[in-house]
Structure formats: structure tokens, C-alpha cells
Picture (cartoon, rainbow, N blue to C red):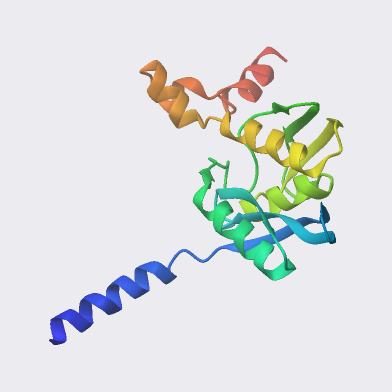
Length: 189
């Protein structure tokens, strides 16, 4: 009997372990015209992340706002993606993402830059755990398309370790050698 209780406790601990933060990006009041008049509902867009490299977004519709947010949060948790981060604070390389008429450009940034990005993109970066990034949205200002374009770009990001594994090389062969460049410049002078 004690053994079963112990298993339940471990299972409960495992379920509570991934603690996610969530951010409500947009909420819309939508109406449906029916025979007796109009029925109002709400559509919510939520971004969820663990602030350590995992992020997801979801949308939910319901007659009440809290229910719509709950549905969106559940969907976001199911659709999470993992994004490799450099030094746990920025992106590995510059990238572009598209969805419909929405296009986003994201650039890696030096330490101390902060998150320079507009509304929905900022929510994605904060939930992802990025601290330094410069991003620009071009085209559609629709928050749904902006978030989808941002997620599209983030899925295409690759760490040096992934590139090295794909090419069958070592990580040191992939990365530029920073120490040798100043030394060779001093030797020439």
C-alpha cells in the first residue's frame, strides 16, 4: 500500500514539474447572428513557455473570457516547440519567418540589448526566455499571423551542435575561430 502511495506522489511531482508561464496576447469579442438576435463569444490568443527554450501558442473560443483563455492555454501547451538558445539569452543566428502576409525578421543581439520587438513577438520571446534580440515585423499586423511567422522562424533555427552533427564534423570546425583573428592582425602590424 505504501508503495502505491509513493508512486502516486512521484507521478504528481512529475506532472507539476514543468511550470509554464503564459501571456494573453489578444482577446476578441465575436458575435454570431441567430434567429433571436446575436450571441456573443470570445476568442483568445495565448503564448505559453517555460522561459528556458520552449514556447507554444494556442487559440480558444468560448462564451466566457476565462474559458476561452483556458482552452487557448491548453492548446498552447500541446503545441510547444523547443528552440536552441545561445548562452541561454539570445538566438544563434539571424532569421526570417513568414505566414500569410506576415513577415518577421529576427537578429541576434549582444548582451544588454534587451528585447526589441513589437507586441505579439515580444510575448513569444519573453515566454521563450530570450533576453537579447532585435526583431521587426513587416507586413501584416494581425497578431495571429505575427505569432505564426515568429514560430515559423524559430523552428528553422539550428544550433552549431545540430549543424555539426548533420555535416559529420565537430562543433569547433563549424564555429569561427575568434582567438586567432586578433593574433594574426597583431603579427602583421
